[in-house]
View 1 (spheres, rainbow, N blue to C red):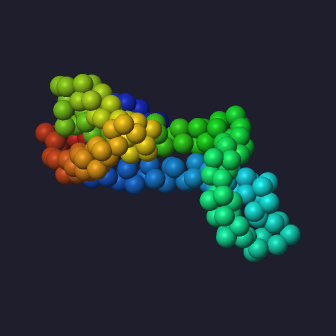
View 2: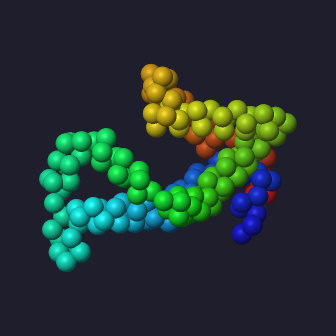
Amino acid sequence: MLKFFQFSGTISGTTYFLRVLFTILLSIPGIIIIFSFFSSYLIGEGFIDMENPEGFDQLAFQEKIEENPDEFFTNLWSAVSTSWMFAILIAFLPALWFSIATTFKRVSALFFENRINVFAGLLTFEILSDLIGLGIISSLGFLKTPFSIISFIIFLFLVFKNSETDKDDHEG
């Protein structure tokens, strides 16, 4: 099991694709924790009544956001505690580590001589793409679509490009 999280060896395109799918499964605990946070926030603010859980008033919820979105999101942000952040980080850490190790192994299979440089460039590009896509770097928002297309093309390249290593000789 440990070899799946190590930064050594190589993998085929098929294995890379399957590991990307497995990363989604590894993310499920983090997604559950995020839903738990929002549920506890909505219960705490009184949008969900525990005596009548079917009585979620979506219209009142939507009106509260539309009335004063700054106040709503300030309250939401103030509900985020260190324990929630720590729980989310711990829940997503295995998926993140597995994903980075998987990408490194695939890059190693395709570009063995320059694997460190190619991997660093790919990781930098993907982080920049995520920052632009999430709106954190809003000044480069016009690059959102081109970066998304390039990321998809890189993913397809990593999946479908044949490496010089035989399929049975990959060790990862």
